[in-house]
Structures are given as structure tokens and as C-alpha cells.
Image (cartoon, helix red, strand yellow):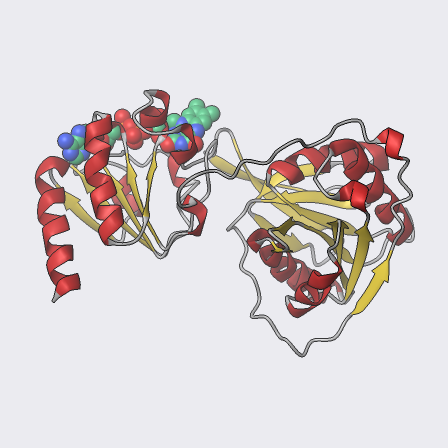
Amino acid sequence: MAESKGAMIYGEVAQGKLSSNTAELLGCGRKLANDLGQELSAVLVGSNISGIVQEAITFGADKVYVIDDPLLKDYQTDSYVSVMEKVAKQVMPQFLLLGHTSTGRDLAPRLAFRLGTAASMDCVELAIDPESKLLLQTKPVYGGNALATFTCKSFPQIATVRPKAMSPLEPHISRKGEFITIEAGLDPSAVRTKVLEKVEAEGIRLEDVDVVIAGGRGIGSPEGFKQLEELAKILKGAVGATRPPCDNEWVPAGAQIGLTGKIVAPNLYIGVALSGSMQHISGCSGSKIIVAINKDPDANIFREAHFGVVGDWKKVLPAFNGKVNELLSG
Ligand SMILES: Cc1cc2nc3c(=O)[nH]c(=O)nc-3n(C[C@H](O)[C@H](O)[C@H](O)COP(=O)(O)OP(=O)(O)OC[C@H]3O[C@@H](n4cnc5c(N)ncnc54)[C@H](O)[C@@H]3O)c2cc1C
């Protein structure tokens, strides 16, 4: 693709709006496109999605390619790969960013194969190399113990970006952009799977709350986690966990934060009776304030924390909950 030009992001639609992760991709893509001195485009794929085009422009896109077709109502690998291949071949962007979400994880490698290029998965930093103008794609390696930076000499350079690793721009309602429709051109018989039902996960999404109370192995039981829930309730937050409590079924698997769990970046993260392993920290290091409660003064979590209490959580937490309650009611 000698003529490759411009930056592109793949936008995801959630409940009729751009997903928060798409706004992050647009923020990051905008900066990279500016560094290249080129345009940023967004691709939106789905059914009845023309209403959100302006939203993508508001968050930084110069152009929005829309593939709107009833056959694309739900994400489906075959049809989405096929339309994305069509868009990428038509537009020939220099690079394409997708979220490291279940969709992005499915789509990016397949698309890279179809386009004869490669995909870097789960990038946490992206930059333009000043000399080669290639995309510098940085991602955790060796179980999160190191970061490695990759470049790809085939185009488009494809990367998935870890949610919360990038920040969205302030939306500008007055921003202007172009809207281009591309026909899906799908043969209905090529759509081989059908979504029969969607079931929303119950409860608060860890990724969306301002306060996360995470418990570790030291909590010791499901009953212990009930005390963390009390604090979460007081602070209008949600309870997360390290891997051992999930493996032991003290909490649901969806509560796991870390390399192989969720990525959170709340305003306040309170880590209780967890050691602060690299694999866990990689999922919460973007938190604005980290507070740690651990009985071991040498626990790694104290190296990451802004505030810490050395002590047995069973003694510290009730006093902590009481004080927070007092402050909030006073
Ligand atoms: C490929 C791979 C992927 C992984 N992915 C993840 C991941 O996504 N998320 C994740 O969390 N882990 C992950 N892990 C596991 C990770 O390596 C650690 O084993 C795990 O994070 C440790 O959890 P922990 O801190 O709860 O337990 P521990 O390391 O055992 O720490 C328990 C802590 O509790 C403290 N403690 C005990 N009792 C008390 C008490 N009464 N009061 C106060 N403090 C107390 C102890 O001092 C200790 O620091 C992964 C591992 C691998 C190999």
C-alpha cells in the first residue's frame, strides 16, 4: 500500500451512542494524526447509526465512514471483517486503531491477515517515530513485567488499544467534518450466525465507577468481601478483586482487575489485602489516587500507593468505614 495516508479508528457503538473507548481512540488518533500532519477518519459499522456521526466528529474525527446495513445490526465476525476489509482497501489509511475490547480482539488479527499486515494487540502507548513516521506501538510483555515497543512496515499498521490507556478530547459541538457512506454489499447468505438474545451483565460496571474497592487473597472469604461491599456502597463505588479471590469463587470472575481482567482508572482505588503484583497493577495503575491497606509494610502495593495503612484489614476497615460515614453525614 504505497499510497497509504491518514489515520483511522474503528468506532464501537454501545446503546445507540459511541462507546467511551471510541472517544479515547479518537483522542489518541487525533494527536497522532496531528503529529503526522494528516487527517483522522473514523469508521462506524452497524444498523441505524447515522445519528452518531456528529458525535465522532465532535470527539476529533475529520471524516466518518459509515456502513449502515440491517445485516450489521449485531457484531458478527464474518460480516464485520468483510466490510472493514472493504473500507481499509478503499481508504488505505497509514494506521488503524481499534479498542482492545472483545470486538477489537476478534476483528484486528483477522483484518490484519486479510490486508497482509500485522496487528499489535493491547497497546498502552502510541506515538509517531519522528524519523520513519511509523507508529510506535508499546504494549506490556512477559506477563506485564516489561513494556516493548514495536513497529510494523506493512500498511495499514494495526493496533488495538487498551481501554482507559488513552484520554478522550473535550468534545467540541461546533467541530465540522465529512460524512461518507460506504455500501456494505453483503450477501445475506454470507451472514452465517444470528444473535438470538442479548443479556446485559447485572450490577455496576467496574470500568465506569469513580471509586473501586479491590480485595486480594488476604480478604480470605466471600464474607470478607461483604465488608468491602459496605464501603463501596458508602462511596457509591464497586468492588473488584485480584485473581485469587476470583479463582476461589469468593467473587464473580468479572470482578478481576489486571492483565487478564478488567482495566480500571477510577478517581479513587482502595486496594485491601492485596500485594500489588505487576499483573494486578497493570489493570489499575491509571487510577488517580491509590490507597493501600496491607499488614506487610514491604508489600509492593505501597510502592504504587499515594496513601497507605499498614495493618490488619479486619481492624482497619471498620474504623475506615466509620470515619467515611461520619464525614459524609457531617
Ligand atoms: C499470566 C498471568 C496473568 C495474571 N493476571 C492477573 C490479573 O489479571 N489480576 C490479578 O490480580 N492477578 C493476576 N495474576 C496473578 C498475580 O501474579 C498474583 O498472583 C495476584 O495478583 C496476587 O493476588 P493478591 O495480591 O491478592 O495475593 P497475594 O500476592 O498472596 O497477596 C496477599 C496480600 O494480602 C496481605 N494480607 C494478608 N492478610 C492480610 C490482613 N489480614 N490484613 C491486611 N493485609 C493482609 C498480604 O500481606 C499480602 O500482601 C496473573 C498471573 C499470571 C501468571
